[in-house]
Length: 484
Image (cartoon, rainbow, N blue to C red; front, side, top):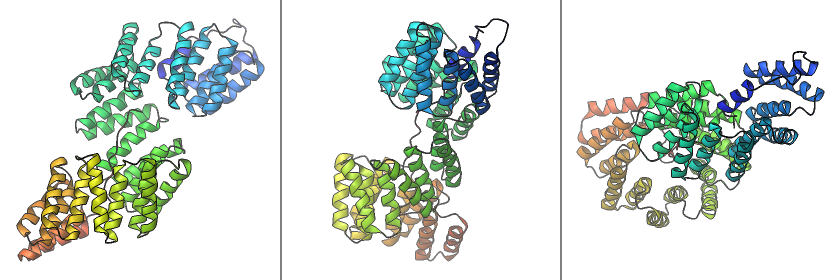
Protein backbone atom coordinates (compact mmCIF):
# COMPACT_ATOMS: atom_id res chain seq x y z
CA UNK A 1 0.00 0.00 0.00
CA UNK A 2 1.33 3.41 -0.85
CA UNK A 3 2.38 5.57 2.07
CA UNK A 4 -0.24 8.22 2.72
CA UNK A 5 0.53 11.54 1.06
CA UNK A 6 0.18 13.47 4.30
CA UNK A 7 2.72 11.22 6.01
CA UNK A 8 5.25 11.44 3.17
CA UNK A 9 5.08 15.21 2.84
CA UNK A 10 5.30 15.79 6.57
CA UNK A 11 8.46 13.69 6.78
CA UNK A 12 9.99 15.52 3.84
CA UNK A 13 9.26 18.94 5.28
CA UNK A 14 10.71 18.03 8.67
CA UNK A 15 14.20 17.22 7.29
CA UNK A 16 16.96 18.94 9.25
CA UNK A 17 20.61 18.26 8.52
CA UNK A 18 22.37 16.96 11.65
CA UNK A 19 25.69 18.00 10.13
CA UNK A 20 25.14 21.72 10.03
CA UNK A 21 26.19 23.66 6.94
CA UNK A 22 29.18 21.47 6.00
CA UNK A 23 27.75 18.67 3.95
CA UNK A 24 29.43 15.26 3.95
CA UNK A 25 29.34 12.70 1.11
CA UNK A 26 26.68 10.88 3.07
CA UNK A 27 24.64 14.07 3.33
CA UNK A 28 24.96 14.71 -0.40
CA UNK A 29 23.68 11.23 -1.20
CA UNK A 30 20.88 11.69 1.28
CA UNK A 31 19.71 15.04 -0.08
CA UNK A 32 20.01 13.83 -3.66
CA UNK A 33 17.85 10.84 -2.74
CA UNK A 34 15.24 13.14 -1.21
CA UNK A 35 15.05 15.30 -4.34
CA UNK A 36 14.71 12.23 -6.57
CA UNK A 37 12.04 10.86 -4.25
CA UNK A 38 10.08 14.11 -4.50
CA UNK A 39 10.29 13.88 -8.29
CA UNK A 40 8.86 10.36 -8.26
CA UNK A 41 12.17 8.85 -9.46
CA UNK A 42 12.11 6.05 -6.91
CA UNK A 43 14.72 3.77 -8.50
CA UNK A 44 17.28 6.56 -8.66
CA UNK A 45 16.34 7.74 -5.15
CA UNK A 46 16.83 4.19 -3.92
CA UNK A 47 20.43 4.13 -5.19
CA UNK A 48 21.28 7.43 -3.50
CA UNK A 49 19.64 6.54 -0.19
CA UNK A 50 21.29 3.14 -0.10
CA UNK A 51 24.64 4.87 -0.49
CA UNK A 52 23.73 7.24 2.34
CA UNK A 53 22.77 4.27 4.50
CA UNK A 54 26.09 2.52 3.83
CA UNK A 55 28.06 5.61 4.72
CA UNK A 56 26.02 6.21 7.87
CA UNK A 57 24.36 2.92 8.93
CA UNK A 58 23.11 4.41 12.19
CA UNK A 59 21.12 7.21 10.59
CA UNK A 60 17.49 6.33 11.29
CA UNK A 61 16.03 8.70 8.72
CA UNK A 62 17.91 7.02 5.85
CA UNK A 63 16.32 3.68 6.77
CA UNK A 64 12.96 5.38 7.08
CA UNK A 65 13.10 6.86 3.60
CA UNK A 66 14.34 3.63 2.05
CA UNK A 67 11.42 1.90 3.71
CA UNK A 68 9.02 4.42 2.18
CA UNK A 69 10.35 3.69 -1.32
CA UNK A 70 10.19 -0.06 -0.81
CA UNK A 71 6.61 0.32 0.43
CA UNK A 72 5.66 2.27 -2.71
CA UNK A 73 7.21 -0.53 -4.78
CA UNK A 74 5.21 -3.07 -2.73
CA UNK A 75 8.40 -4.69 -1.47
CA UNK A 76 6.75 -4.99 1.90
CA UNK A 77 9.15 -7.37 3.64
CA UNK A 78 12.12 -5.10 2.89
CA UNK A 79 10.11 -2.04 3.94
CA UNK A 80 9.10 -3.68 7.23
CA UNK A 81 12.73 -4.45 8.05
CA UNK A 82 13.84 -0.89 7.33
CA UNK A 83 11.00 0.71 9.31
CA UNK A 84 11.80 -1.51 12.29
CA UNK A 85 15.48 -0.52 12.09
CA UNK A 86 14.56 3.16 11.89
CA UNK A 87 12.32 2.85 14.97
CA UNK A 88 15.02 0.97 16.89
CA UNK A 89 17.73 3.55 16.05
CA UNK A 90 15.61 6.50 17.21
CA UNK A 91 13.07 4.99 19.65
CA UNK A 92 12.03 8.26 21.25
CA UNK A 93 12.36 10.59 18.28
CA UNK A 94 9.96 11.66 15.57
CA UNK A 95 11.59 9.30 13.08
CA UNK A 96 10.33 6.39 15.16
CA UNK A 97 6.82 7.81 14.94
CA UNK A 98 6.97 8.00 11.15
CA UNK A 99 8.42 4.49 11.06
CA UNK A 100 5.51 3.16 13.12
CA UNK A 101 3.09 4.90 10.79
CA UNK A 102 4.84 3.23 7.85
CA UNK A 103 4.54 -0.15 9.56
CA UNK A 104 0.86 0.56 10.16
CA UNK A 105 0.33 1.23 6.43
CA UNK A 106 1.96 -2.07 5.45
CA UNK A 107 0.08 -4.12 8.02
CA UNK A 108 -3.14 -2.47 6.84
CA UNK A 109 -2.33 -3.37 3.23
CA UNK A 110 -1.75 -6.97 4.32
CA UNK A 111 -5.11 -7.05 6.12
CA UNK A 112 -3.43 -7.24 9.55
CA UNK A 113 -5.70 -4.65 11.10
CA UNK A 114 -4.85 -5.27 14.76
CA UNK A 115 -1.11 -4.97 14.08
CA UNK A 116 -1.76 -1.80 12.10
CA UNK A 117 -3.73 -0.36 15.02
CA UNK A 118 -0.93 -1.16 17.49
CA UNK A 119 1.68 0.55 15.31
CA UNK A 120 -0.47 3.67 15.10
CA UNK A 121 -0.69 3.77 18.89
CA UNK A 122 3.12 3.50 19.11
CA UNK A 123 3.51 6.30 16.60
CA UNK A 124 1.28 8.59 18.64
CA UNK A 125 3.74 8.40 21.53
CA UNK A 126 6.40 10.31 19.59
CA UNK A 127 4.19 12.17 17.12
CA UNK A 128 1.12 13.08 19.19
CA UNK A 129 -1.96 14.87 17.90
CA UNK A 130 -1.25 13.94 14.28
CA UNK A 131 -4.47 14.01 12.25
CA UNK A 132 -3.28 11.33 9.85
CA UNK A 133 -3.16 8.78 12.68
CA UNK A 134 -6.79 9.27 13.64
CA UNK A 135 -7.81 9.19 9.98
CA UNK A 136 -5.98 5.88 9.60
CA UNK A 137 -7.61 4.47 12.75
CA UNK A 138 -10.95 5.51 11.25
CA UNK A 139 -10.16 3.49 8.11
CA UNK A 140 -9.42 0.45 10.24
CA UNK A 141 -12.77 0.78 12.00
CA UNK A 142 -14.51 1.31 8.65
CA UNK A 143 -12.89 -1.82 7.23
CA UNK A 144 -14.11 -3.77 10.26
CA UNK A 145 -17.62 -2.45 9.70
CA UNK A 146 -17.51 -0.37 12.89
CA UNK A 147 -18.85 2.76 11.24
CA UNK A 148 -19.83 4.68 14.36
CA UNK A 149 -16.30 4.37 15.78
CA UNK A 150 -14.92 5.38 12.37
CA UNK A 151 -16.96 8.59 12.44
CA UNK A 152 -15.63 9.45 15.92
CA UNK A 153 -12.02 9.04 14.76
CA UNK A 154 -12.69 11.11 11.64
CA UNK A 155 -14.04 13.89 13.82
CA UNK A 156 -10.85 13.78 15.96
CA UNK A 157 -8.73 14.08 12.83
CA UNK A 158 -10.79 16.97 11.45
CA UNK A 159 -10.64 18.80 14.78
CA UNK A 160 -6.84 18.69 14.57
CA UNK A 161 -6.72 19.42 10.83
CA UNK A 162 -10.02 20.62 9.29
CA UNK A 163 -8.71 20.12 5.76
CA UNK A 164 -7.55 16.51 6.30
CA UNK A 165 -8.55 14.74 3.09
CA UNK A 166 -7.99 11.22 4.47
CA UNK A 167 -10.52 11.78 7.25
CA UNK A 168 -13.05 13.32 4.89
CA UNK A 169 -12.58 10.43 2.48
CA UNK A 170 -13.28 7.84 5.19
CA UNK A 171 -16.25 9.84 6.46
CA UNK A 172 -17.61 9.99 2.91
CA UNK A 173 -17.06 6.23 2.57
CA UNK A 174 -19.10 5.64 5.74
CA UNK A 175 -21.95 7.79 4.42
CA UNK A 176 -21.75 5.94 1.10
CA UNK A 177 -22.00 2.57 2.83
CA UNK A 178 -25.14 3.83 4.57
CA UNK A 179 -26.58 5.15 1.29
CA UNK A 180 -26.56 8.70 2.65
CA UNK A 181 -25.59 10.05 -0.75
CA UNK A 182 -26.17 13.73 -0.04
CA UNK A 183 -23.88 13.70 2.99
CA UNK A 184 -21.28 11.63 1.13
CA UNK A 185 -21.34 14.08 -1.78
CA UNK A 186 -20.89 17.09 0.50
CA UNK A 187 -17.93 15.56 2.36
CA UNK A 188 -16.17 14.14 -0.70
CA UNK A 189 -16.52 17.18 -2.96
CA UNK A 190 -15.12 19.28 -0.12
CA UNK A 191 -12.24 16.81 0.32
CA UNK A 192 -11.36 17.07 -3.38
CA UNK A 193 -11.63 20.87 -3.29
CA UNK A 194 -9.40 21.17 -0.20
CA UNK A 195 -6.81 18.69 -1.42
CA UNK A 196 -7.19 17.94 -5.16
CA UNK A 197 -4.01 15.84 -5.09
CA UNK A 198 -5.39 13.27 -2.62
CA UNK A 199 -6.18 10.26 -4.87
CA UNK A 200 -8.44 8.20 -2.64
CA UNK A 201 -10.99 11.01 -2.30
CA UNK A 202 -11.35 11.05 -6.10
CA UNK A 203 -11.82 7.27 -6.08
CA UNK A 204 -14.47 7.33 -3.35
CA UNK A 205 -16.22 10.19 -5.12
CA UNK A 206 -16.18 7.98 -8.24
CA UNK A 207 -17.83 5.18 -6.27
CA UNK A 208 -20.51 7.64 -5.16
CA UNK A 209 -21.16 8.71 -8.74
CA UNK A 210 -21.43 5.04 -9.73
CA UNK A 211 -23.99 4.48 -6.99
CA UNK A 212 -25.96 7.41 -8.39
CA UNK A 213 -25.83 5.99 -11.93
CA UNK A 214 -23.41 8.68 -13.18
CA UNK A 215 -20.84 6.34 -14.66
CA UNK A 216 -19.09 8.88 -16.89
CA UNK A 217 -18.41 11.02 -13.81
CA UNK A 218 -17.37 7.91 -11.87
CA UNK A 219 -14.85 6.92 -14.53
CA UNK A 220 -13.46 10.46 -14.67
CA UNK A 221 -12.82 10.56 -10.92
CA UNK A 222 -11.30 7.08 -10.82
CA UNK A 223 -9.04 7.91 -13.76
CA UNK A 224 -7.90 11.00 -11.85
CA UNK A 225 -7.13 8.81 -8.84
CA UNK A 226 -4.89 6.66 -11.06
CA UNK A 227 -3.12 9.71 -12.46
CA UNK A 228 -2.37 10.86 -8.91
CA UNK A 229 -1.35 7.42 -7.64
CA UNK A 230 -0.76 4.88 -10.41
CA UNK A 231 0.34 2.20 -7.93
CA UNK A 232 -3.05 1.58 -6.28
CA UNK A 233 -4.65 -1.52 -7.79
CA UNK A 234 -8.05 -0.81 -6.23
CA UNK A 235 -8.46 2.19 -8.54
CA UNK A 236 -7.96 -0.01 -11.61
CA UNK A 237 -10.41 -2.55 -10.19
CA UNK A 238 -13.07 0.12 -9.82
CA UNK A 239 -12.78 1.14 -13.46
CA UNK A 240 -12.65 -2.51 -14.55
CA UNK A 241 -15.86 -3.26 -12.68
CA UNK A 242 -17.70 -0.38 -14.35
CA UNK A 243 -16.44 -1.41 -17.78
CA UNK A 244 -17.74 -4.94 -17.20
CA UNK A 245 -21.13 -3.63 -16.13
CA UNK A 246 -21.21 -1.61 -19.36
CA UNK A 247 -20.22 -4.69 -21.43
CA UNK A 248 -16.98 -2.93 -22.40
CA UNK A 249 -15.02 -6.12 -21.91
CA UNK A 250 -11.97 -5.31 -24.04
CA UNK A 251 -11.42 -2.12 -22.03
CA UNK A 252 -11.98 -4.03 -18.79
CA UNK A 253 -9.32 -6.53 -19.83
CA UNK A 254 -6.86 -3.74 -20.59
CA UNK A 255 -7.29 -1.95 -17.25
CA UNK A 256 -7.26 -5.18 -15.20
CA UNK A 257 -4.10 -6.38 -16.91
CA UNK A 258 -2.46 -3.14 -15.79
CA UNK A 259 -3.58 -3.89 -12.23
CA UNK A 260 -2.11 -7.39 -12.42
CA UNK A 261 1.19 -5.93 -13.61
CA UNK A 262 1.26 -3.94 -10.37
CA UNK A 263 0.26 -6.89 -8.20
CA UNK A 264 0.76 -10.28 -9.93
CA UNK A 265 -0.50 -12.17 -6.88
CA UNK A 266 -3.88 -10.44 -6.54
CA UNK A 267 -6.33 -13.33 -6.86
CA UNK A 268 -9.39 -11.07 -6.74
CA UNK A 269 -8.12 -9.12 -9.76
CA UNK A 270 -7.30 -12.34 -11.62
CA UNK A 271 -10.87 -13.54 -11.04
CA UNK A 272 -12.23 -10.26 -12.44
CA UNK A 273 -9.87 -10.56 -15.42
CA UNK A 274 -10.95 -14.16 -16.02
CA UNK A 275 -14.57 -13.05 -16.05
CA UNK A 276 -13.78 -10.24 -18.51
CA UNK A 277 -12.02 -12.69 -20.84
CA UNK A 278 -15.00 -15.06 -20.57
CA UNK A 279 -17.50 -12.33 -21.41
CA UNK A 280 -15.33 -11.18 -24.30
CA UNK A 281 -15.43 -14.68 -25.80
CA UNK A 282 -11.76 -15.40 -24.98
CA UNK A 283 -12.30 -18.75 -23.25
CA UNK A 284 -8.69 -19.87 -23.56
CA UNK A 285 -7.38 -16.74 -21.82
CA UNK A 286 -10.14 -17.00 -19.23
CA UNK A 287 -9.15 -20.59 -18.44
CA UNK A 288 -5.45 -19.70 -18.12
CA UNK A 289 -6.26 -16.76 -15.86
CA UNK A 290 -8.52 -18.79 -13.56
CA UNK A 291 -5.93 -21.57 -13.38
CA UNK A 292 -3.31 -19.03 -12.40
CA UNK A 293 -5.61 -17.74 -9.65
CA UNK A 294 -6.28 -21.29 -8.44
CA UNK A 295 -2.54 -21.93 -8.24
CA UNK A 296 -2.08 -18.86 -6.06
CA UNK A 297 -5.10 -19.51 -3.84
CA UNK A 298 -6.60 -23.03 -4.14
CA UNK A 299 -9.29 -22.10 -1.63
CA UNK A 300 -10.78 -19.27 -3.70
CA UNK A 301 -14.46 -20.09 -4.25
CA UNK A 302 -14.82 -17.47 -6.99
CA UNK A 303 -11.94 -19.06 -8.90
CA UNK A 304 -13.53 -22.52 -8.71
CA UNK A 305 -16.82 -21.16 -10.00
CA UNK A 306 -15.01 -19.36 -12.82
CA UNK A 307 -13.24 -22.57 -13.84
CA UNK A 308 -16.55 -24.44 -13.75
CA UNK A 309 -18.10 -21.87 -16.10
CA UNK A 310 -15.30 -22.26 -18.64
CA UNK A 311 -15.26 -26.07 -18.47
CA UNK A 312 -19.04 -26.07 -18.94
CA UNK A 313 -18.79 -23.86 -22.02
CA UNK A 314 -16.15 -26.18 -23.46
CA UNK A 315 -18.39 -29.23 -22.92
CA UNK A 316 -16.07 -30.67 -20.26
CA UNK A 317 -18.97 -31.34 -17.93
CA UNK A 318 -17.27 -33.66 -15.45
CA UNK A 319 -14.53 -31.11 -14.82
CA UNK A 320 -17.17 -28.38 -14.43
CA UNK A 321 -19.06 -30.54 -11.92
CA UNK A 322 -15.84 -31.25 -10.01
CA UNK A 323 -15.02 -27.52 -9.72
CA UNK A 324 -18.54 -26.73 -8.51
CA UNK A 325 -18.27 -29.41 -5.86
CA UNK A 326 -14.92 -28.02 -4.71
CA UNK A 327 -16.55 -24.60 -4.41
CA UNK A 328 -19.43 -26.04 -2.39
CA UNK A 329 -17.04 -27.89 -0.10
CA UNK A 330 -15.29 -24.58 0.58
CA UNK A 331 -18.56 -22.65 0.96
CA UNK A 332 -21.60 -24.96 1.34
CA UNK A 333 -24.10 -22.10 0.88
CA UNK A 334 -22.46 -20.59 -2.20
CA UNK A 335 -25.21 -19.82 -4.68
CA UNK A 336 -23.19 -19.11 -7.89
CA UNK A 337 -21.69 -22.61 -7.64
CA UNK A 338 -25.18 -24.08 -7.42
CA UNK A 339 -26.33 -22.08 -10.44
CA UNK A 340 -23.42 -23.22 -12.61
CA UNK A 341 -23.80 -26.83 -11.45
CA UNK A 342 -27.52 -26.70 -12.25
CA UNK A 343 -26.70 -25.31 -15.72
CA UNK A 344 -24.37 -28.25 -16.34
CA UNK A 345 -27.04 -30.72 -15.24
CA UNK A 346 -29.50 -29.06 -17.63
CA UNK A 347 -27.01 -29.46 -20.49
CA UNK A 348 -26.69 -33.12 -19.54
CA UNK A 349 -30.48 -33.50 -19.48
CA UNK A 350 -30.52 -34.07 -15.71
CA UNK A 351 -33.38 -31.67 -15.08
CA UNK A 352 -34.53 -33.06 -11.73
CA UNK A 353 -31.06 -32.69 -10.22
CA UNK A 354 -30.89 -29.13 -11.52
CA UNK A 355 -34.27 -28.15 -10.08
CA UNK A 356 -33.38 -29.62 -6.66
CA UNK A 357 -30.14 -27.62 -6.55
CA UNK A 358 -31.90 -24.41 -7.51
CA UNK A 359 -34.65 -24.90 -4.92
CA UNK A 360 -31.91 -25.37 -2.31
CA UNK A 361 -30.40 -22.08 -3.48
CA UNK A 362 -33.75 -20.30 -3.10
CA UNK A 363 -34.04 -21.68 0.44
CA UNK A 364 -30.74 -19.90 1.16
CA UNK A 365 -31.75 -16.67 -0.59
CA UNK A 366 -35.32 -16.40 -1.95
CA UNK A 367 -34.53 -13.02 -3.56
CA UNK A 368 -31.61 -14.17 -5.73
CA UNK A 369 -32.82 -13.15 -9.19
CA UNK A 370 -30.43 -15.33 -11.20
CA UNK A 371 -31.63 -18.45 -9.39
CA UNK A 372 -35.23 -17.73 -10.40
CA UNK A 373 -34.06 -17.18 -13.98
CA UNK A 374 -32.10 -20.45 -14.07
CA UNK A 375 -34.98 -22.36 -12.49
CA UNK A 376 -37.32 -20.86 -15.10
CA UNK A 377 -35.04 -22.06 -17.90
CA UNK A 378 -34.94 -25.51 -16.29
CA UNK A 379 -38.74 -25.72 -16.07
CA UNK A 380 -38.89 -24.64 -19.71
CA UNK A 381 -36.65 -27.56 -20.68
CA UNK A 382 -38.84 -29.88 -18.61
CA UNK A 383 -41.95 -28.69 -20.46
CA UNK A 384 -43.43 -26.99 -17.39
CA UNK A 385 -44.20 -23.72 -19.15
CA UNK A 386 -46.44 -22.09 -16.56
CA UNK A 387 -43.82 -22.66 -13.88
CA UNK A 388 -41.15 -21.37 -16.24
CA UNK A 389 -43.01 -18.11 -16.89
CA UNK A 390 -43.66 -17.65 -13.17
CA UNK A 391 -39.97 -17.97 -12.28
CA UNK A 392 -38.80 -15.75 -15.12
CA UNK A 393 -41.30 -13.05 -14.19
CA UNK A 394 -40.00 -13.26 -10.64
CA UNK A 395 -36.43 -12.76 -11.85
CA UNK A 396 -37.52 -9.63 -13.74
CA UNK A 397 -39.40 -8.34 -10.72
CA UNK A 398 -36.19 -8.63 -8.68
CA UNK A 399 -33.99 -7.15 -11.42
CA UNK A 400 -36.18 -5.13 -13.82
CA UNK A 401 -33.27 -3.95 -15.99
CA UNK A 402 -31.73 -7.31 -16.86
CA UNK A 403 -31.60 -7.94 -20.61
CA UNK A 404 -30.82 -11.58 -19.88
CA UNK A 405 -34.01 -12.15 -17.94
CA UNK A 406 -36.22 -10.48 -20.56
CA UNK A 407 -34.53 -12.51 -23.29
CA UNK A 408 -35.18 -15.70 -21.32
CA UNK A 409 -38.87 -14.88 -20.90
CA UNK A 410 -39.13 -13.81 -24.54
CA UNK A 411 -37.68 -17.17 -25.57
CA UNK A 412 -40.32 -19.04 -23.59
CA UNK A 413 -43.09 -16.95 -25.15
CA UNK A 414 -41.63 -17.58 -28.62
CA UNK A 415 -41.45 -21.34 -28.09
CA UNK A 416 -45.07 -21.36 -26.93
CA UNK A 417 -46.11 -19.31 -30.00
CA UNK A 418 -47.15 -16.32 -27.92
CA UNK A 419 -45.53 -14.08 -30.50
CA UNK A 420 -46.97 -10.71 -29.45
CA UNK A 421 -45.74 -11.19 -25.89
CA UNK A 422 -42.41 -12.47 -27.20
CA UNK A 423 -41.91 -9.40 -29.41
CA UNK A 424 -42.75 -6.99 -26.59
CA UNK A 425 -40.48 -8.78 -24.12
CA UNK A 426 -37.53 -9.20 -26.50
CA UNK A 427 -37.66 -5.53 -27.48
CA UNK A 428 -37.30 -4.78 -23.79
CA UNK A 429 -34.22 -7.00 -23.63
CA UNK A 430 -32.65 -5.16 -26.56
CA UNK A 431 -33.48 -1.82 -24.97
CA UNK A 432 -31.40 -2.77 -21.95
CA UNK A 433 -28.58 -4.35 -23.96
CA UNK A 434 -28.43 -3.41 -27.67
CA UNK A 435 -25.56 -5.90 -28.16
CA UNK A 436 -27.49 -8.96 -27.00
CA UNK A 437 -27.35 -11.06 -30.16
CA UNK A 438 -29.58 -13.83 -28.81
CA UNK A 439 -32.37 -11.34 -28.16
CA UNK A 440 -32.24 -10.23 -31.82
CA UNK A 441 -32.35 -13.83 -33.01
CA UNK A 442 -35.35 -14.64 -30.88
CA UNK A 443 -37.05 -11.43 -31.96
CA UNK A 444 -36.52 -12.48 -35.58
CA UNK A 445 -38.04 -15.88 -34.81
CA UNK A 446 -41.08 -14.22 -33.21
CA UNK A 447 -41.60 -11.96 -36.25
CA UNK A 448 -41.29 -15.01 -38.52
CA UNK A 449 -43.92 -16.78 -36.45
CA UNK A 450 -46.29 -13.85 -37.01
CA UNK A 451 -45.51 -13.68 -40.70
CA UNK A 452 -43.85 -10.27 -40.35
CA UNK A 453 -41.00 -11.10 -42.66
CA UNK A 454 -39.55 -7.62 -43.20
CA UNK A 455 -39.27 -7.08 -39.45
CA UNK A 456 -37.77 -10.55 -39.09
CA UNK A 457 -35.09 -9.77 -41.68
CA UNK A 458 -34.19 -6.53 -39.87
CA UNK A 459 -33.89 -8.39 -36.56
CA UNK A 460 -31.68 -11.08 -38.09
CA UNK A 461 -29.54 -8.46 -39.82
CA UNK A 462 -29.10 -6.67 -36.49
CA UNK A 463 -27.97 -9.97 -35.00
CA UNK A 464 -25.25 -10.12 -37.65
CA UNK A 465 -23.97 -6.59 -37.02
CA UNK A 466 -23.64 -6.59 -33.24
CA UNK A 467 -20.87 -8.23 -31.26
CA UNK A 468 -22.19 -11.42 -29.65
CA UNK A 469 -22.68 -11.56 -25.90
CA UNK A 470 -22.46 -15.12 -24.50
CA UNK A 471 -25.84 -16.38 -23.36
CA UNK A 472 -26.09 -19.58 -21.34
CA UNK A 473 -22.73 -19.40 -19.58
CA UNK A 474 -22.06 -15.75 -20.30
CA UNK A 475 -24.10 -14.55 -17.36
CA UNK A 476 -22.52 -11.38 -16.04
CA UNK A 477 -21.28 -12.00 -12.56
CA UNK A 478 -21.82 -8.97 -10.31
CA UNK A 479 -18.74 -6.76 -9.88
CA UNK A 480 -18.45 -5.09 -6.52
CA UNK A 481 -16.65 -1.76 -6.46
CA UNK A 482 -14.90 -1.88 -3.11
CA UNK A 483 -13.21 0.75 -1.00
CA UNK A 484 -10.11 -1.43 -0.42
